[in-house]
Length: 291
Length: 308
Image (cartoon, rainbow over all chains, first blue to last red; front, side):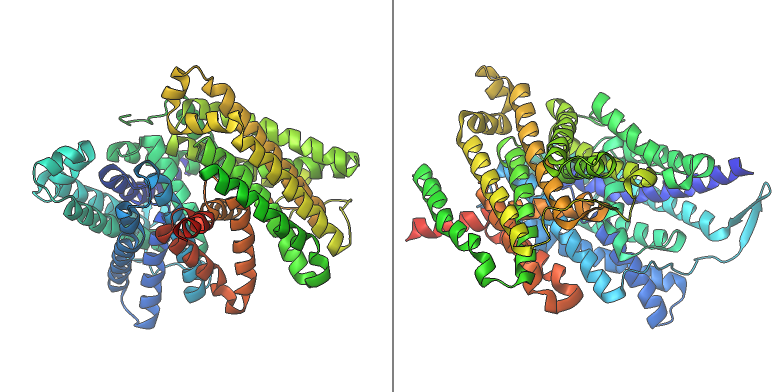
């Protein structure tokens, strides 16, 4: 039965990884920002959702909605307080903007982690399942919630695809990731496009945080690890490539699950890290990268 | 103008060094301990600045080099009982090997990709130490049989003079032709290569120098505290602190990295009454410094003198 368990667990974990990484790659592709406070934003969504559920005795869906809202607000604060001042600063040389954004978001991530630890302690919390109960799939007991999370991840990813590829608001995002200068020359206001991508980013990352809290549990201390795993998946898939990130998420998710079940849970992340280093050495642009 | 300012800064450092050297007469044992740690951090941050500020390599894994030096020294001391000096040299050599391993991808990769490799290097080192916990003490860490000294003041002086010597050597290197060529390769590797400089060779040299000082400082820290543990020499958060110290102090200045480390570790201590919030506040202040004064603390001093 292990094979089926690996198949299901791997699928759900990979979907969660994919959802978590997709925002990270989107914001890099469109605005050129590597947000090292990424895990922090997921943690905010998870912890606020969990706290709201307890404090106002909300049902799991209301709590999840509040968590996503908190993630969105955190993304806006990241953009307006940390990133935009650096992008617009005249004192920072243009070729050094990138490292300033890396350092600033790193600091911001530390602030989020410490602030969350202060407000909610660093004990891991698990949100109540969205759907209770278990089902038997080919003899394997699986919580309904786990399946629900896998499905929800893909629904959100599908919605993102619809928005980006099929709507008037989304298409400029695609264009901005190809050639921002040309888009500016066509009369599009870049700051609006940036704001819109941060909105999408906040929602995606918020949903990922809330679902993660409902499946595996989250603590304020997970912020750094979540950023690192999103970063690795995104580089493995190719920076800025959404589909590459999804493929990479499945590669990493299944490798980790197989290692954990077949070899030892202690060694869980190691094969994926070694593959990552090899890919970066041999094919620096990642699976589907453009550069 | 710039060189005058810079050398004037070096002169300013002399009285500061004298005041620091007589620290044991006017500082409490507690602050001597805090400063001892700050001095080792200063060396970490200066080594990082040589790679980042001059060679333009974003190394997210300074603790990979530090950890190799620290654990190299600790393992040799524990299992072979070698004298401390031998252990430190061995640790330094281990770091240099690690530096070369990190430099190999750096010859091919740039920016975020290289940053990720260094990050993964730290994670892998950490996992290996935890997996071979029978040998390395794992998460808990390993006690080393020897320590530098049991006297706080002596430990303080060791750290201070080690930092001062490292600072002097690194500043000289950064102003030498090697430093200039590194700066050129960092800003435009293709132009530097077109001018006939061997980019690979210079980058490799920068990694070896940075690794040597990181490793020695890591080993010294182990023999100061008597333990080598993942939490004190390898954890990503230590690397984050080093990067922040170097950028807040002022990148591409070497001495700024040292000043940044001391200021941040002291601020951490002074704000301890805030309890859990102290790291939050220190990070917030650093963030404000980076956004408002991108040149860092040292850049701020320069600007003021130019204005006057």
